[in-house]
Length: 106
Image (cartoon, rainbow, N blue to C red):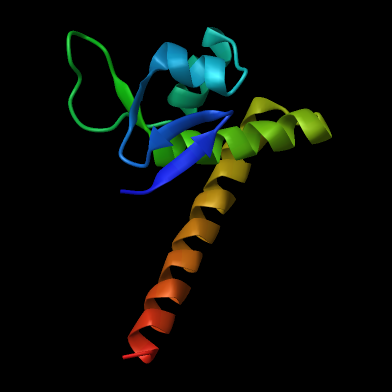
């Protein structure tokens, strides 16, 4: 099992986070977090439990990176959505490269 460090908090890659945890770890207000959900940038994982949505560690990692860019470059929330889309695409491409490299070593 691999671990990923997020804001000095070790989480499993299959970890799940609540709405409030996502907002806190990304340094967003609840309103900003809800707006990102409305834009479709943040999607819940799996089924809700007790009327509580959960979000993946992978999504949280992308969102934290995008929010860091927001703070560094004074971006608006819509720019965070675009940044997340590019970060997600980059992660997919990295995975494809790693898969091809592993296949070529066989």
